[in-house]
Image (tube, rainbow, N blue to C red; front, side, top):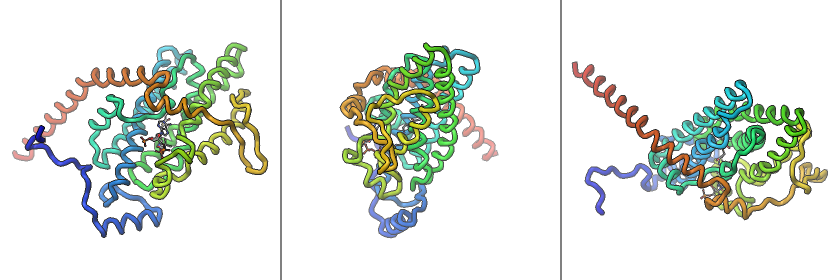
Amino acid sequence: MAPAATSKPSKTAELPEDPAGRARFDELIAADQRVEPTDWMPEAYRKTLVRQVSQHAHSEIIGMQPEGNWITRAPSLKRKAILMAKVQDEAGHGLYLYSAAQTLGTPREQMTEDLISGKAKYSSIFNYPTPTWADMGSIGWLVDGAAICNQVPLCRASYGPYARAMVRVCKEESFHQRQGFEILLHLSRGTKEQREMAQESVNRWYAPALMMFGPPDGDSPNSAQSMAWNIKRFSNDELRQRFVDMLVPQAEVLGLTLPDPDLKWNEERGHYDFGDLDWDEFYEVLKGRGPANAIRLERRRTAHEEGAWVREAAAAYAERRRVAAEKVKAA
Ligand code: FAQ
């Protein structure tokens, strides 16, 4: 079908090469400075950012579900209030990130459509179920912990709106990680059943949390270019190693075991060695065949449909204000 006569060209359509803009972009990257939305940027840079930032936003939004599942069942009023605040924070992170992605010219509606149609990716970790309260501890300690490791370097990402969003997100994730650690500490110092519940949960979340950093460097098609553009500052394996090194002493404080028989200090490397991960499982989850992929997407679709009236009401209100403001101007 021919496009409607009124349809505007997409803002993301290929921009013509601009030699002066290109030179300025190269200078900014070489000087490790920030690229801003009004700067000329290569289409491939824009596309990479839209890909990463929108996936990141989707992860925050889908990431509300595994914990949202426990809000009505939290073991005390205090725990419930903390969990609600945490889940709301994740919604906020999603919104900052969608806003950052929108500055690259991709409409929010498009990103939402890509998510609910199953076209877009979001973090593999949110396709695992949360059958026990201890999972709230593991998500905070391991999932937010991995998110912080990954995101602190992103505060220095070359694209300004993404980097600035990350600063606030990291502050909040840091609180999230501590509350998860505290839940596990409480359980591990509790009854035998509580200790067992904490250990069983860590056993399930440990390997998927390590996979959050993405495939091994040799199988990571995007890393080299993203690092050359100062979007990523460390490779997937470097960050994974940093995370494992951080977890081991924390697990000792918790009195819990990390489920990896190959985990051992390597004096020569000055790092912990750790066992291979099941990358077949990772790719299955990416293909939509993880334990909770279908449930997560179905829930998101339903929430989107049920929220249609809110979007319509907000748009109608904005239109009313616009008309009123125009009347005042004309008077
Ligand atoms: N899950 O070439 P690479 C959070 C894909 S937020 C799914 O290495 P790249 C907060 C990747 O997209 C967690 N897909 O890719 C929270 C690519 O596919 P594509 C989210 C993955 O971009 C806590 C392909 O594999 N954080 O947890 C994953 O250089 C608690 C090849 O990979 C971010 O998004 C994965 N784990 O590096 C919320 C951080 N890994 O796109 C609620 C920002 C890789 O070519 C509760 N993102 N893939 O089709 C990044 O740092 C990067 O994008 C990586 C992947 C490191 C995730």
